[in-house]
Image (cartoon, rainbow, N blue to C red; front, side, top):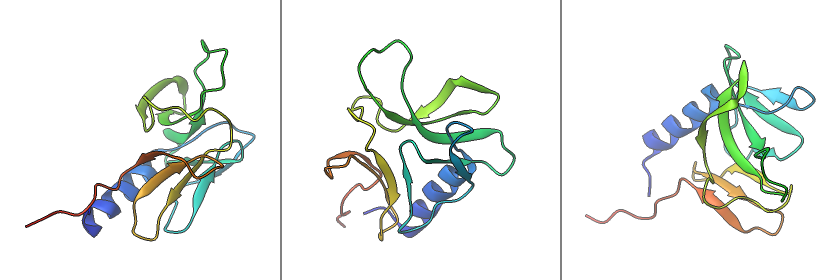
Amino acid sequence: MISSDTNKQIISFCTFMVGCFSCYVARDIITTGQNISDGSDYLESPEKKFQMGFFSREESSEVRRYVGVWYTMDPKTVVWVANRDKPVLDSTGVLAVSEEGSLKLLDGNGVEYFSTETGMLTE
């Protein structure tokens, strides 16, 4: 399991980085029990330099949704993608902070596409 300090760092990273499109609701923090839903909201850094949210690649004709971080001034320059190898195949995705403090990307059926949870560490 990831330490609480690591979880705080991950949440701080995601709070700092952020985003999606101007018609969505922007906030600069996500905490335990909250989420970011595809098509309705995103995160934006306090300095408005980064955004984090759901996006699709332009070259794809299929619905493939990703969660990523990009520059606000250049949304095509994505600097980090959570589910690069496993896109959500519809727009029901939700990025949530679990009660344990890990980030989880789920679709509308509860299928997990990304998680920061690593499991238990043994001594």
